[in-house]
Length: 165
Image (cartoon, rainbow, N blue to C red):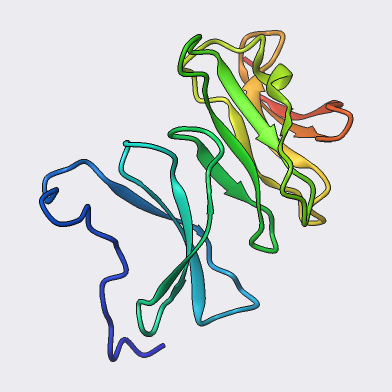
């Protein structure tokens, strides 16, 4: 890309909602498809959506909607949305859901967050290079932040690193 023909890829809130709080974030750069990127858009009035956006034309196509209201979505290394993290609107407890590649069914794996303090930045970071496990940030038994590798099928966790202090 040489910067010629550049255009804004952000989506606005819509007619009559110019000052509504709204955000877009790049979920995946899709390295095997250099003409497209995946964008998550959220206007905090429902469930976030994922769009595949043509970076040359700005055309967008909705790929999916989050199963959780205000849920943060995570893609695997192939650009497939496979994790969603959020909160139960009634209990305010963290919710974490996972799905297998190619599946439409979500599996609740919230037990990974049960012993974690509310409103602390813990949760999924990314998939491992082979897309079989998840890098996950959580508190260690010592109370420091640790980086774990999690098998989403068995929920087995392996501590990769923790703050020694």
